[in-house]
Each structure stands twice: as structure tokens, then as C-alpha cells.
Image 1 (tube, rainbow over the protein chains, first blue to last red):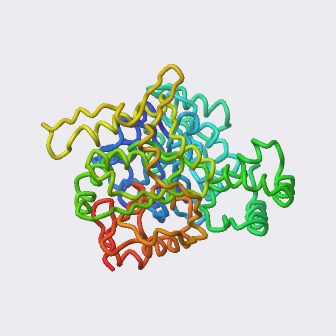
Image 2 (cartoon, helix red, strand yellow):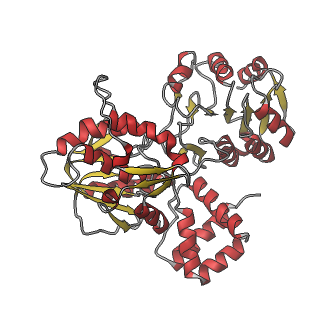
Image 3 (cartoon, rainbow over the protein chains, first blue to last red):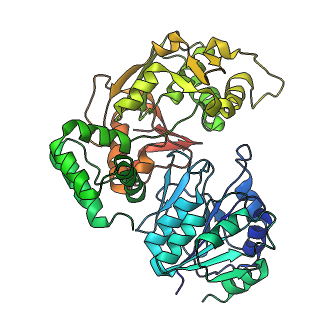
Length: 185
Length: 280
């Protein structure tokens, strides 16, 4: 039983995530946690751009905000986003991990600890290796791991790194990821 | 793999029993990560860590410093600094003195950002600035005012946005030289804050969790940026009350971009943009 979805992406993931958000219905039964790298100087406007086509609200959460179903939480720029045991968001300005803040690994690892086998983790297109360790943690905690098909990715480094480290459940195209999410009750 | 919740609890209680520090109300995931880092860096396991904390006060102090380390940047979030410049500080202009407390100043980049802004606004001399942090290593860094240049390149853009430009008047451009405030030495990758800025603030060790009082009783402006994110909700509430007590009526409180005041205490403030103004 999935209780939360967490998605990590970097270069080339913006269009994919836009398509996914566009496909999800207003009453999508799970929270969607998003950790997407962005260029250092493109700090604002990102959440607005994602919101345009999304049927569910996309927000950059405040610290200690409660996580609710049917809402997408985008890790704010320049913060790490942790998922606490009481299903609240906790932000941090600790140093960057692998040059990334937000770090996908940290969000994935803390979400895995909180949701255990009820977490669905998805890694999308990207130009670095962030997320690979986090996806492994999700698998090790009994959760489900999906990786976007590297053949479809604009930049395949991130998905390939994830596949190298973890025996994932599915390698999916964007459309297959959407189909999978829409089947979640 | 990873530390268990029981191990975290025994770490917290060991520290509590052997010092005045209390981490029991810190946000759990970042605390866990920092403890793991201490263990990795020292190449020990949790039982050994606990033993050393019990027997070696200096090691305990160092561990506390390693856990409370935090990063900060020059003019982080320019929008906030523009608000400070055009909406908040002008209202304090008529004060005889402007009392400012930088609570949780870490390595001091924002303390200097504020002093630069005050200087540009002609308010430098009437400002009294207290800058505190729990972490003595960070305070030492702050006093030295020497930063990595390369790390701060991006933040020079922020300097320009806040100090040189006016978001309300695009024609305005103040060509303020960086050298007025710091020297950049590219060969050894350093950015050195000028002495007159370094002499200005009073740096003091202070633990927001314990909330001890200090001699400045009240402030016109308190900056507490990206500090309460490390605290759980209950501890946040305690800190909000304490900050409220240390503010003059109509005084301003500024948090980080994604921090907000929760609970009843928020009713005692007007929220103006990113700022909280004390009503009563």
C-alpha cells in the first residue's frame, strides 16, 4: 500500500514532472514530494511554472508543515527537505550534499525512514548521481522503486546511477509512470 | 543500517546529563544526520561515543559544536534584504538608537550584510548589534570575518541587488564598490571583511534552547534566520515567546524564507511580507 510518492529529478526532468502533475487528478490519494534541482539563479518562478498545468496544488512548504494527500510539496530552493516521523516537513540549511541543496538523497532517505514499505520513489532524468543512494534506502526499507527509462531521459546519468546501485521494481517511460500512478487507490 | 531511535535517545540523554545542552526538542532527521557525521568523522560507534561524552567534557563541547554547525551566506534571499532596506529600516530611522539582535548568527555573513546595509543607509552609528550563537567555532569565524571567495561569488549578485539597485526604481543605480566593505583575494580564495565592520557587533555565546537573558533587554529588530527549522514545534513555540519578550512594541522580527510563526503567539504580531511586527 503506497502512502506517499517521492520524485527526484534534475536536468531534463522539468517536462516529465509537468506531464505527471498534469495527469494526476485533483483527488489524487497520496501526497507527492518533489525534489528537483534547479539552476542557482533560477530560484523563483519554479513553483508557479509547475502549478500551471497541475490539477493538484504545488507548494514550496514552510518548515513543520503537515503533509497532506493530494498536494505536491516542492523542496524550496537552497534548503534541504526532510520528512519527519510525524509526517511533517522539516527544512535545513546544512551544507550541500554532492553539490546539491536540496539533496534528493536526503529527502528520499528521510522519507524512507518515515514511510518504510509504504513509500514509492521515482528517479527521473538528471545530470548527476544524486538520488541513487536515496532510492536504495527506499528499496532497503521495503518500499517501491521506479526509474525513468534512461533511453527516454534527456540526460541519463541520474537514472543510470540509480539503476547501478539498486535492483528497482520498474523501469518505466513517462507514460507508464503516469499509468502506474493513476492506478493507485 | 543507520542509527536507531533508541540510540538517538541515549545520545540526547547523555548530553543532557553531562552538560547544560538539551537536544531533545531538535528536529529529529537533521539531528540524526549530524550525530551520524560525528560518529563517522571520529570513526567510532555509538557505545564509544556515549562513553567519551560521559568522560570527556572537551569532547562533549566539540560534539555540540559539530552538531550545531550551520551555513549562511551574504545577503541570502535578496528580496528580504530589499524589504529591510525600503520598508523596515526607514521606520526605525528616527530612533535615537536602533537595537538589533541577530539570534543564531552562525558564521556571521548576515551580520555583515546587515551592517553594510545600515552603513549605506546612514544608520551605522546609531545601531547597536548583538550577534549570538550556540556554536563558539562559528562565532570565532564570524569575528574573523574571513570567508571563501569562490563560495560567495554568487552572493555578490545579491549584494548588487540589495545595495546597488532599487527594485522600486529601475533607473537608480548606486555604484558602491565592494572594497568599501571587503577585500577579495582571488589567489588564496578569500573574502575579508573590513575592520570597521568587524569591530561593530558584540558577539556572544547564547543558547536559544536555554533562553537565558542578557543585558540588552529589548530590541527594535531581531533576526533569527534559519535557526528554528532545527527545532520541533514545541520548542519553536518556546522560542517565539522568548523572542516576543525581547522585542519592543512595534519591533520587527525576521525569520528565514520558509519559516513561519505558528500557534497563538502569532496573534500578537502583524505579518508584513516576511516580517512580523509586534502588536503588544
